Length: 441
Image (tube, rainbow, N blue to C red; front, side, top):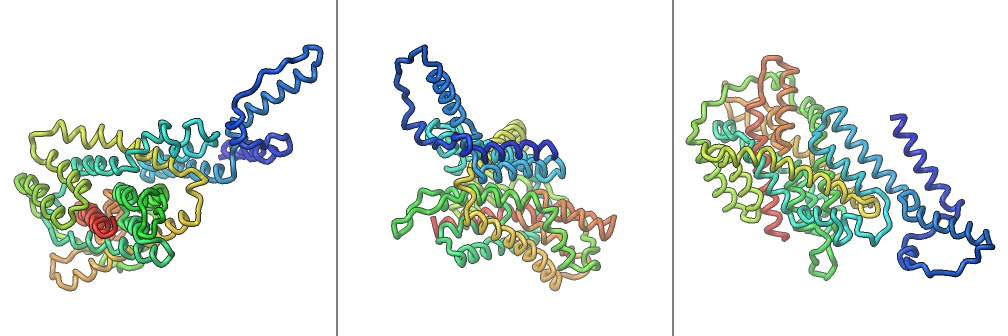
């Protein structure tokens, strides 16, 4: 950390002394005066030579990041380093936070506009990679990989636990209402609302459709481009599941209820596993056709896994493909957080709403689990802790539930039970996104 502060100190020092050295020349004037006329130089006048050399150094300096850096760039670079630090030091979703943090660094290296460097400059390499985010291409591919690595057995064995995944979606609609109250228009509020589902790919997919900086509102104004803030907020709270959820669990669930042991789930046949993705695909997409890209790829990936005939395709989807798309998605989403676009009042409001919505979603799942127990008897009762897994942060929230149960009873294993509401949360958030898109898209 000492070396990190030294680097930031040097950058800050160079930023402060720019006016003193007369190096505060704007980047725009450099571009407009890019062609330098050839002059006759009198070799006998050494001063002209030195002046020319100094002007060349000034021009070189004005094209460097040191000349164009702002406090916003420094702040965002610091945030990117924090993301990487959390991923490495504390193992908080490293597969997401490290690519995103690196993307934040790449997106906030100061540059002179017009050289096709930035992610928002048409024709730049980053702009081409960002196309998959803007057009919602990457999220369905992520869902394909998730489907190929997910075992729905626990959900098939105990379908009533799907209600917990649905209950946790209260965070989506609470956030939607909160965004409207804070002054966002309907499409923007709809895109922000999905943060409550704690599902990064779904948040990116919906914001690319509703809050993309392209669509026009009925009054002729353009919606804001909120893809970056929404995606960063969604992935940040997904990574912080181990920090946010345990205090809420201990607050709402008594120690006695935390010790409830659930009976082992019944064995699920291979035929049931093969039928489930087909039946679930038809049912969910008939309910929410707008979510077809997400749900279709999710259940297609699961069918590849369970069919027993396409193991090569399933292996590719859950390993190489999802890894490649995760890298591209993380880096480009991170790079979209350019300081001049990301550091706004709207971003702060989105992060605040995201925190509140995540808490509400967790509370909704926990309280609904307690409510369900009023109608269940004997060994059919469920441990209310698994309600927290209704948010679709797979599989982290299920792991957190399992770890919290072990603290109360070292022999109470809830991981398989918690996976049922966890995967249903993924389905629920995609359905919620489709419903919002059908009304506001």
